[in-house]
Structures are given as structure tokens and as C-alpha cells.
Length: 355
Image (cartoon, rainbow, N blue to C red):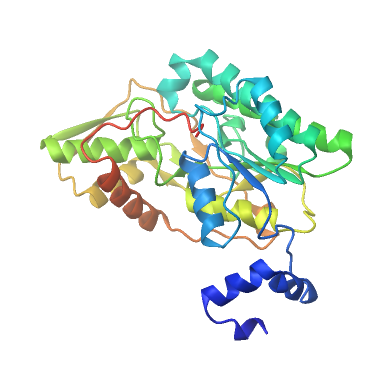
């Protein structure tokens, strides 16, 4: 029967009627996430949140519930509680929060900690109170110890101190992650799913060199250097640290995959990575090639490098049948095209990814 539904329009009509749900169940496939489910995406205008919205809409799910910060301040507990009581979402993707690179963490450590912790606490408490079916919270690879065996498995969390340059963000994300685990333990359930994606990038990222993460900051720096005809670009550190980068569309795909599972027979949290890393120097060379910058790349070794390496062990999510699709070269090229079309020579606004 499924084979006969050749066109996307026909498949969508059957999904809405419920027949595909029944057929999938007969075939033993997971359909935890129904196509008419009520799904709230917090941070829908940011990097990961916008990718989740695109993925859900592409697959024919009911239009996700979203609110801009002017409509709902997630740091305000009363507003969040009232919103959840009114909407009663079945699923929540918590992609809201303050993000940034080394400079942002060092300049605004208190803002990183109290802002992110307030958002996480308010949303998780309200979601628990109204009985959401599942909630996904995003941790960060910076939660792992600075000196950690590679690739980093989830049970290495709290086995050492995180990298000092990203400690404020790491601590706030550890708090959210372990609150999810505490709720699951006390409630004897697995509704709260903390995931740990590695360094994300893609459309709707923050491209401000002063506050962005490394890949997007480099893309903007090289683009500006090309436009201005600069002979050289000076970058922080030695270029030797290694990082794993994952496109936001792959993260969104992983989240939908998790929500579709009837039985999440894995321990939490769950790493989401691609299984390969590159040095910052290699990344800079790749971005320069994509952008078309022909000048010199120089390194300021007086600036901090951050953790020497951050490669995730993604065996848990792979055991559930998920794998990434976007290669680094493809992802950077697509992200640069989006950047040129939507940002160009203008400096993008500092993004807090709160919607």
C-alpha cells in the first residue's frame, strides 16, 4: 500500500487521514510522533530551532507552535507557566538560550549562566507540570572535561573540569542536562531527553566575528577580507585544536528521529555528532577556499586555543538507526550561499536564539 503512494501529495493526504500511521504500526515501524501532534519549538528563529521547524514542515507535520521573545520572555517564569497552561504542547524542542564563542563567554559570564539556567528551569518545570510527552534539551560538547579521552562518550561527563574559557556556558548546560535526568529518575519516565550536539553551524547562525562560534565567525571574517581586498587575516590561537562540526539540519533530523521512537532504549544524555573532526587550521583553509579568499592566513598565538580536541562518541544515537547526511564541505558551501544572500556585507545582529 505504501508503495502505491508515490507522490508527496498523496502521502501527505494519507498521513493526515491516519492511514499511514496504522500501516507503519502494522509494519513494526515507530510512529511515536504523530503528524498532527502539538509541537512547541522554543528558539525557532535561531540556528537549531529554525532547522527543526524546516524539518517538521518539510515532513508534513502540523505547523509547530512558536513565539518570539516579544511575545514570550522565557526568563519570566510566570509568562512561561501561563503559556504552557494555555497551549498544553505534547512535545517541546528547547533550542532557546544564549550562545557564543570564547570572547562572549569571557565578557558576559554571568549573563550566560543566569540567562540559560532561568530559561531551562522555567521551560522544564512548566513542561513537567502540564505533562508533555517528550522534551528535547540541548546541552553542549563544552560540558565535557578539557582533558578527556577521545572520542568523548557520555559517561565522561563530570569526570573532570570543563575548558575554563567556556565554563559559564558549560555549567549552565550541565545544570539543564542533569535536571532532565533528575526528572526522569524521580518520575520513573524518559520524557526529558538531553542531547549533546557538537559544534553546530548553518543558516540563521550568528555571524558576528566578535560573538559567533568559530566556523561562522571564520566564514564572516574571510568574506569581509575578500570584499575589502585584505592581504591577510589574523586568527586567534595556533590553529592546532581539533573540532567536530555538524550541520543544523543533521541535528534537526536527529531530534525528529528521537521523537519518533516508541522506546528509547538508550541511556541519557545522547551525543549527536558526525564522527570526524578537523583542525582549526584545516577549517580555515577550507572556508577560505569556499569563500574564494586568496590572501595570507596568520595566527595570533597570544590568544587562547580552548580545549585541544572535542570529538563526540555518537554510538548511542547510531544504535537507534540515525546517521548524519551533510558533509562538512557541502555544509560550509551551503551556509556561505545563505550568508551571502541574507547577510552579505552587513554585520549580522548578535543572536541569542530565543525566537
